Image (tube, rainbow, N blue to C red; front, top):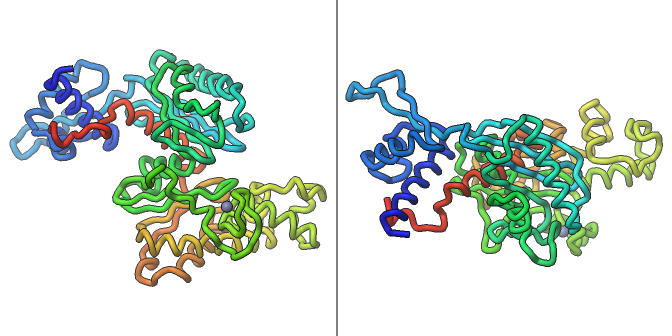
Length: 405
Ligand SMILES: [Zn+2]
C-alpha cells in the first residue's frame, strides 16, 4: 500500500472514529477532535458523503461567517454490530447500528459456561435469532463483540476460563463462524465501557464501575480511558483481602472481598443464617428449601421490606464500601457506578456502600464523589462490547496517527 493511501486511510479512520465517539460533530469540531486541518476534513467528508459511512446535514443557525455549519454523523443504515454479554446465568445480546441506536435485543438464560465447542453453535443460534427477530440482513453485520467472565486477555482475543478450546483464541473461532471481526472482553471491563459510552460514566474522566453480580468485578476509568494493566487483568478488586483468614475463596486464598461482598456471598450468608434460625420471609418464599435461596430472592425480599434481607445487604454493602474507600483514595474518581444483579436493590445496597466508603476514605477525596446505581442495568456489558466491535471497524490505535494528521 502506498504511503499516500495509508495516510488517507488513517485520516478517514480518525474522522470515523471521532464520529462514533461523539455521534455528531461540525466539521470544525471534527478538525479540533482529530488534529486534521479543516480543509482536509472538509475534503474527506465530501468524498465520503456518497459512500457508506458518513451523512451530513446543515445546522439551522448560521456561523460567524454567515454560513450554515455542516454537521457530520455516521450513517445508521450502514450496517450493525452485535454485542454479546455472556454470564453464568444470563446472556444479553444487543444489536447496535453505527448511529449508536439499539435496533434489537435479546435476553436469554445462558447455556452452561465451559469449554464445550457446542457453545459456539449456541451463540450462533442466539445471534441468528436476534437478527431475524427484527428482520435484519445478516450481510449487514459488520462485527461482533463478546464479553465473558473469568480470566480474559482481550487484546489477544483469549478467554482462559471459559470457551478455551485447546488454547486457540475464542476470537479466531468466532471470527471463522461469523466471518466478521470479533472483539473479546472481560465482563467487568465491558460493563465499564458500556457505562462510559452510554451510562453514568459518560462524559466523565474518572470513574469506578462496580459489577456486583455473582462475583465482584471492577472497571477503572482514568483520564477517560479504561485501565488494563500489562496483561489486561487490572481491576481484580474481588480478590483483594478483606477479612484476614476469612472464608475460602474459589481463587484458592482466604478472605477475599468477593467472599463477603458479592451476589454469591449474599446467597451463601442468607442460607447459613436462616439455617441457624434467623427469621425472614425468605424461608416461606422457598417453602423451607433454603438451598433455593439466591441473590435475586434476597434483593426482592429487601425491596419488599424484609428486615433480615435489608440488614444483610447493609452488611455486604458496608464491606464493599470499605473496599471502595481504598479505590477512592487511589483513583480520586468523580463517580462510582454500581451495576450488576445486586444493583437491583437500589438504595438498599447503594447507601451502605456510600457510608462504608465515606467512613474510610480521605475526607477531601470522598466528599464530592457521586454514588449511583447503573441505569443501564444488565445491558451495560452488551452495549460495551458492541461499541468495541464498532470501534474496531475504524481502528487507528495500532498505528501512530500523530505522524499523519
Ligand atoms: Zn479470591
